[in-house]
Image (tube, rainbow, N blue to C red; front, side, top):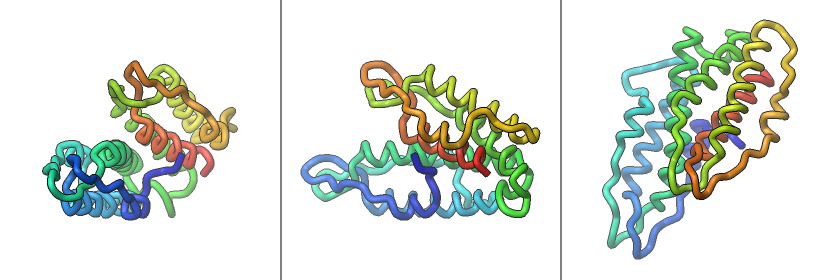
Length: 198
């Protein structure tokens, strides 16, 4: 699992479509650059007028390409799921902390922001049908535990679960029943684990 960062957004690559529909390359690239800039803003504790919200990304639509190469639609959709989660969590963390969630605020603020991030991210998770996802009950249980451990650490107590425990957890993949989007869950768990290990 790896957290979705601005650098990773800028480095994202998608399979080109040939002789099948894809998303318009220029429009996807333009949106991803705006997402990356917004994640940079949020990491610095800023919310400027140009900072994207998750809802703006969710509402984005791309024209389909038919007779020219485009980006694989499923790959782009999966990546944007993680971007949406990262933006929601970033906005929630900045709002909850009232200042940049990392840096001079110290480890305690990071842990508080991490707990807020996990709560906000979990609230935005929605099962997706007919796609590979993670089993909903397992994810809910793990996120409950992660939130409790972050709150415990923020109070100065020793957490019972470590960042390594969170990162090494293997979740069941669902195929024929709804599950949470894997990329979104992975990004949320990695950010929570990073806060737990701060």
